[in-house]
Length: 315
Image 1 (tube, helix red, strand yellow):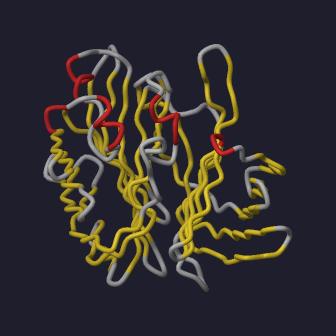
Image 2 (cartoon, one colour; image 1 turned 90 degrees about the horizontal axis):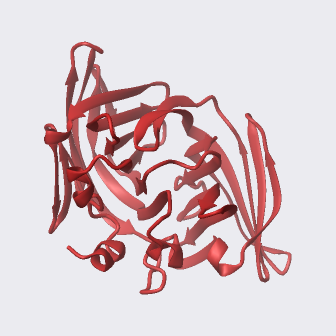
């Protein structure tokens, strides 16, 4: 499979050639599932460094997280159609099958969720995903792709004998790959808006680029069939950037458009992120955060709504 094909299809496993090396590498997919009251996200992936190769699944709920290790031999990928299998667990854009048992950690998670009516961002040859032209640069430490801004979900997940019903609920899928997460960044995502059929994603990170760093912006707001992108490569500027451990207030501007994102940060649940291919950096994510998104054009408000059950990380 050639590099151009993989870049144009970021859902597929990008690291097949890395499996035969000891070069620092990670690749992980993020499947977020929420109903009106609660949510659960699964992060299947692999990490490689000079000491070992490993597969894993991370699980995050409203109030807990779990990290389950697997042998790299238990990781399998398929491309037509896209599918990832780790142990007895299966992940695809059509749904997930979960079968996790870890007696040492006293964890048992099982269930099936089906995905349908997926909505994603607009793409082109120049902009194959949310990173735009940066998708074609081979030395980025961390690559990011959105696989589904919003999808309908049906099914259930049972975690330690607690059943979570996802009938007529909402999902989101993205992924990252490279060698390390950014040393500092914010990320938030919401698609449970109160008054509109909207979906939203934002990440602002300090991005290493050869001999210097720059502030990378990727952000998209979809409202029905309209799409508004605010990114580094379309000359978006950060007008306001107020961040602390409990809240954020960010204003982005692109031409006549201004986007304001506000949030009060709930206490996050610990996850583990990669540094030089090793899963060793503690980060904290909440999937119960409330965010307010307001979009203006020429100072006139054209969208304003609140999303519940949002994902938020401040690192």
